[in-house]
Every structure is written in structure tokens, then in C-alpha cells.
Image (cartoon, rainbow, N blue to C red; front, side):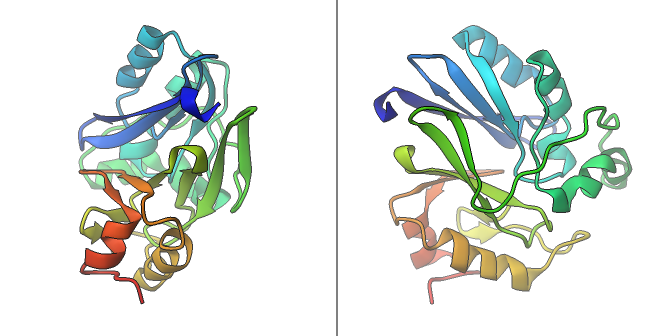
Length: 215
């Protein structure tokens, strides 16, 4: 089954946030992670590939990652999934957006919760593990697809950098602990898809990240 799994990182939206589509090339089942504030890019991708969306997953509730979630979910009769610690942030997207000059409608679909270490079973041989990584936001999570050696980490870890912790709910202490205890324990060859910018690997960041090196 893993030979049929594919993934594509798609930069989109005002802040060029990176959303990710993972799908089974044989069955056409797919998940979207962080459909940014421009859902059209993801809806077009799904349509062009003739994919059947099974889950809309969010790494956290910030507007640049999550504003398009309801539109994408509604198109397939789904409900976005988001850690409960970010539900308030998700609900207040318009208010938070105004503070940074971005406009967004209030979410009109209440999210369903996800939990740390939960296994999201898309179908046989296609699953994602939820990894709670608070620090950038209280409910920030990563999604790890072991069969692909892939971790979609939102705004926790970047190529040579880490996520901001100066926004409401942020904590540098929590962020560093999340990176060391939850992400740096993944195999070194794991591909890391951050919420912005260039992909990297766990091994590269453990060795070279100036903010959080391996202990």
C-alpha cells in the first residue's frame, strides 16, 4: 500500500502558507492538511487528480493555515479536525486576522477534536499519527505518516528556525520541549514539511538548527 501513497506540498494564500495533500494513487482517497486561507488551490488540486477527500486536518488554528478549512470540508461533506486547545483560536479567526491585516469569515463548521497519539485511519495501509507539539499555539500538532517517512509540522519547526512564540498562547519553553521530545525522536531521514518555506529533515535540524539542537 505504501507504494501507492503520494503527497504534494502546496504554497498558497496571502502569507504563502504551505498546505499538504496526501493521497492513495490506487484508491484516490486523500487528506488535506492546512488548506490555508485560499482553499481554491486545494479544491482545484483534488478535482484535477480526481481525489476523494476523507479528512480535513489542521495543524493549528491560525488564519493563514485554517481559514479555508470550512470551505474545503463543506465541499466533501466533512468536518475539520483540530486539537481542542486551539478551538478558541479557530473561532476567533476574524478578530485575530484583523490584528495582522488579514480578512476571514467566521468559521461556520465546528471542528472535531484530535488527540495526541491518535491514529487517523484513512483506509487500510494509509494512516497518520497525531503528535501534539504545543509552543507556537497551545493546540499545535504535527501529522506523521510513517510509511512515507513524512512529518507535516505546521509552525513548530522550520528549515533552520522555529515557530514564533510571541503570539497569544505561545511559549518558547513548550516549543523547545515539543521539538526535542516529540519531533527529534522521529527517524533522522524523516522529511519535514513546515507551514512556511523550505522542507527539511529531522536529522538536518537536530544537527544544525541554531534554536534547538539535539541535546
